[in-house]
Image 1: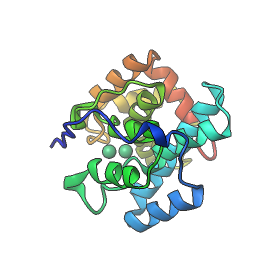
Image 2: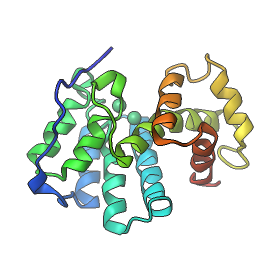
Image 3: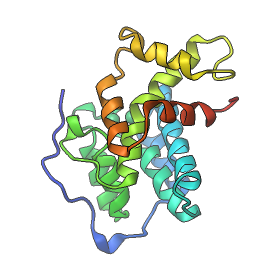
Length: 198
Ligand SMILES: [Fe+2]
Ligand SMILES: [Fe+2]
């Protein structure tokens, strides 16, 4: 299934710096997404984006919130409008005159699906965290201790087991890490280290 966006410009440069407040972003999320697993997934990706922006990119609070907001809303339209996935949330954020960087990151979170190449570091990290955090989460659910004590080698074993979390696209994970210029191991370790109870 593909959802080609057939466009490469998102938002308006004049809106740089415009963001939703955390309250507004969460209201949109709760309004559009009824599936609790999906809400959890987006919050998780948002938290990882925030942590990466602060720790690895050295961004300030305002910069980190842009990264977090992209993660928090990237799948917001999936629950109610799967056939419009990505285009619906993009149009909503354009309508709300949100910073184009945030909209672009969301538009490029699955280049093979939406036909938009991740360009900025924010774009690439959202793409990278999306699939892999899903696999790590699935692994935590089958461990009695959840995330606690989770190790790199356990995650890598699941990654190799194609039947485990079969919906998680392994090729996308490899591709995303290559684009960011980090190893899959580094990304796994970052995800493990930034989970509740880790
Ligand atoms: Fe998605
Ligand atoms: Fe996602």
